[in-house]
Structure formats: C-alpha cells, structure tokens
Image (cartoon, rainbow, N blue to C red):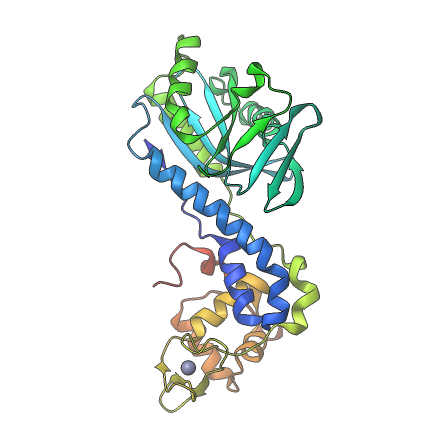
Length: 331
Ligand SMILES: [Zn+2]
C-alpha cells in the first residue's frame, strides 16, 4: 500500500506567488532555487509512478513525512514499513555527473563544467534514521523502536552517472536507482526474516506516522527583506503582470487590458498574501494588499470564503490557515 501526503505543496505556491509579485529582475534571485525544487518534485513523482503497484503486499510506503523532534522537524522523503525492518529513503534527482566521497561526507556534482559540492545524501539518510528511531521511542511505539532502520539513497535521474570514491562494495549498496529497490527490499526481508510487526501493527504505525506528520509552513521572516518590493493588488490570471480593478456594482474584478471579468480573482491574491506575508490579516491589511477601498466589501469577501475571525474591534484579525488545505485554490 502506498500513502501520499495530503498537504498543499507550500514551497511551490511560494515560488509561484513570488513570480507573480516580484519584478522579473527580482524574481531572478529565486529562479535557481525554484529550478532545483522543481527538479526534486519531478524526481519524487517519477519515483512514485515507478513504485505504483510494485511494492510487496506485506509492505507499506509513506511519502513526505515531517516529524517534530525537539522543536525541529525530521523531513523524510519516503519510508518503507516492512514486517522486519524499516527503510528510510532519501530521493535525489541531480542532473550532471556525481562523485560521492563517503570519507568526507561530500557529494560533488559536475554540471556542464560547473562543480558544486553538497553534503553526502547518505549522511542525511543516516541522521534521519537515528532521529526516526528516537521519535518512535519518544512516542512509545514499542514494536517500531525494535525495528532496524536501513538508510537508502535513490538517484531518480536515470541520465546522471555516479561514482563512489574510493569504490567500496560495503558502501555502494546504500546508493541505488529505482529499479534496484525491489531486489534490495527482497534482500533485506531475507536477511531479517523474523517478523516483528504483523499487518495490523504496520497499519497502525503507518497511521500514527501519517497523523503526526506536520505540514511545512512558510517561514515568513525569510521574505521580510522583500516585503516592500512585493507588487500588491489582484493580478489578472491571463495578463499576469496587470492589476485587475474591482467593480463594486457588478461585484466583479475586471482587467482593462484583456477584458477578463472574474468574480473570484481575489482568492489567488489572498493565497499569495498567506504564502508570502502572513497567515493572519486584519480587514485593513488585506484591503491594502488587494487595493479594495470598502471595508464592507472586504468583510463580505472573507465571509463568503468562510474565513474565521478572532478578536474584536481594532484587534480583530482573520485566520487564513485554510488556504494551506490541499485544493483550497481549486474550489
Ligand atoms: Zn488581463
């Protein structure tokens, strides 16, 4: 069984919001990060597609876990729960040519002649495996804390060659490509054939992990230095860099440039606010951002979107957390 995350991809929405809200010149600063994020997501999706229907039926695979431990988060790309072990997978979708130096915990990437050095992903997987064990122990998951956890790095880009320096068969097994995973799982099952968890316990553990996984939330301080450079207003979804004007009599947004009329265009703008500025806003804060003059209009829009309000009078603010629900924008 494969279980997927129910959280909206916050970082994706953040990049898209930045693209809409910054001048082209300013957005260029984020373009590289965006490309590397998108490449990661592409790798993850390719891996999910590949694994679909392939996992032995006694195992469960969980994706994209984010577990709280000592006030920080342990981020796990994929986790296999088997009767006698867990396998913690770090997915990497690097392009270029890779050389791994396990002795110094480094990975070097040569991309079109440009050399870049990263932390060895195996080091990350090993650290996360230790933290997961601690998390299980802290959460009193008695059976789970007795399961060995195997770290695994999977390179999802089939065009990327990698070498390990110096080559060591002991270490080599920790780095594979997706097609080798099933063989690896069979091997691990054979090695540890004494089952610790039965099917019901695996289910229970999967449920607990999934429930405890916390969604990624924006770190707003990350964007505070560009606060003033964000372009406000409701943007036309067709012209992108044109503002739409609110027509109170018709209760619609109108783009003078392409003529588009839209009743719900403010929804995207509210989402941009939540992904970049804050998850709380007063009536005035949002009016300033959307460029709406009437307090009543803003009040009505929040009400229609069923956004809860906290506090009274001057201290009243809207709690916009709902925007993080998967599919809020699509509704
Ligand atoms: Zn337009």
